[in-house]
Length: 386
Image (cartoon, rainbow, N blue to C red; front, side, top):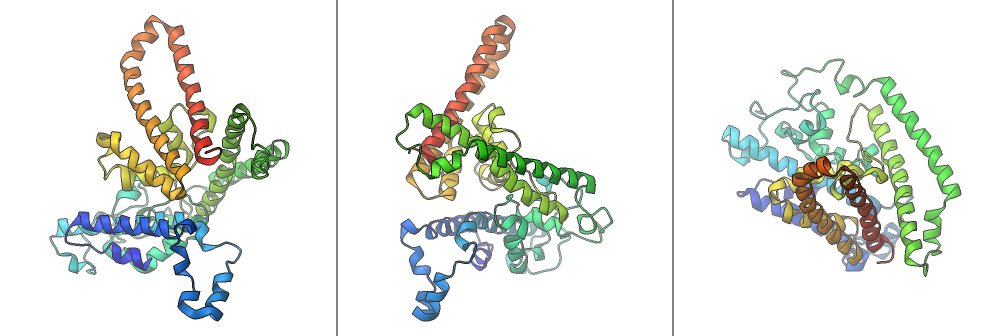
């Protein structure tokens, strides 16, 4: 937290500060990987000696810190980039130099209100004093998000904590500070659906133990058709598993009054494109990428090249592995192909539907079926046969 706090300190040039923040984050992603050989130098033994340091290194606890470091880095990046953006906007409007960052005069800073939606909460800067070490630590360690997400930006999190101008937007009984973001009936219904999903995965894994079969190596040496079928089955089970995991966390957040982003917006089998698949899978992560990567790199105007950087970062964020880097490159390739083919289809599909409706229907079916095979192939390379 301290590293990111100081990395986000406004420099003379906005670009220099942004580069420093991202380099720091990438370095943090790399040093936690055992294969890079840097992690061993971060051992407590090197700091406190063999006796005390050895004990501390040997005690990982029930849940080791490195298992959550990837999500923690996203939250730290969010804090640093939101802090930097808030300073830039505040200074550009007030005309004050960045040395005045501690000033309590935030009358010119855009403020977040309780009724703004998630997108507005995410992009609206907070009062300057809200960007401090304690709040960054609170955002980083907030229990509902710590283990698995959803991925929530610093601005969004702090807006639900009431960081806004109380004189202009007073706290009322409708504020998340004094009630839930949704009604009690809505929250109860949401939790009931999670319980149903828990029962469903118990039944599925009892009759189709695909994850256990993968771990036991029962599919090694199987023909490619069986392996592809197993990957599709695994995708469906993973969809259900992550749905439960993320919605349990979101249920906890809803009980705390935070209406945070939803993940798994649609079934893996009802997706009509590569882009739509990733928008619906880890949807909160997609929001994060759009906010902090896609738009700063030019948005849709630069989608032909920024998609390669995005998927490269996503692959590295998951694991610094050659197979996953290939997985990211293939996802980017198929996304570009989909955009090109989709553009042609939009221009000519209407005329085809009018003149040859049966051909239009079959071509649409072929396109969507091809998507399933592409997802199988990409995930085979990234997570299965390599």
